[in-house]
Length: 409
Image (cartoon, rainbow, N blue to C red; front, side, top):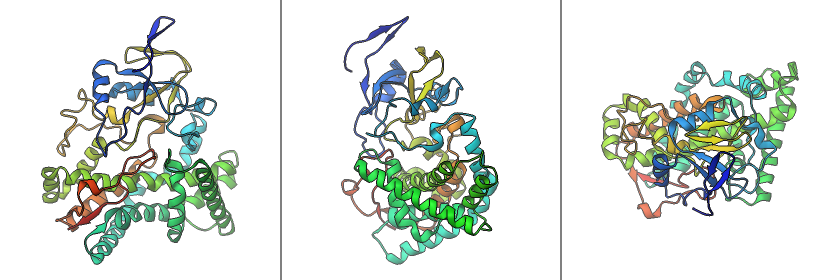
């Protein structure tokens, strides 16, 4: 801890801790979160860039910060938002509050309803089977990230959105600009974003030339052209580009993360192999257990004075909510640091909470269920083909994950 506490008005503001608390170690949750939940659930933090913020670590406090209408995201646009990146991240709808946020979200939410996603499940199984066939054909050792985890979500989002799968290498590369903290130079991030927006702009023009194409991009273009108050041209391009990037990046990362965790919990993996009907519960537990983010980002700003976790947050102050910490809160989850596929009550915050709850949550759930089920049933001997020390983890990105995962079976 640095500095000394300051008294402001009727409260004492603790000195800010540098945040994140440590360099990420694989998928280990920093023990500092547990200490803070116990002794200082609302603490002051200073991220590498931007203004100081409060950090909420307890489950109920994180839910409040993410879901209470007294907090908003829109002020971040005018503020020096606390962040892990030198430049403020492109975050599309994540920088909006209702009603602007509601206007855009309604346009895309119809594509991600449970019924629509379930209709995609057979096709997703088909894609997964073909990818595993290719993996087996290559023979061990083969990279699970390259041959299964990356192409599966990309192909699904391409078919849903209406983006040529043949272009995957280009837009997957450009998408790193949205999740990079320091992995890319600033000028490269801007170059990649410009490339992504330009690419989507070309597809939008194509939909206007061929208006009969039935996909999500075509529907967004029609929404824009039939009622221009609903969607500006810039919003259309950035919304579609954001869906393309976010629609695959996190799932590409989580598939190998989930398999890695299962391999390190052989008793739970054995149960899953013996009873694949446990897959949906397993995915929910893995969403709770795996800390996807390197740290907390996308601060919410208090619109008025609000008491959270026994601390008075003044109007205008930013608050970060740690999903990883909330998901390990022992007052909500029994034995929270243990992977437990039999966990009956699992109200995890893996997809966030409130108005900014992940719009593609149903799609991601389905893809993760298909990926896990296919891999554990088709490859019953699945195992790492390298030592732990040989695995390489992503660095300089908002998400934690493996760069590669050589496996045998």
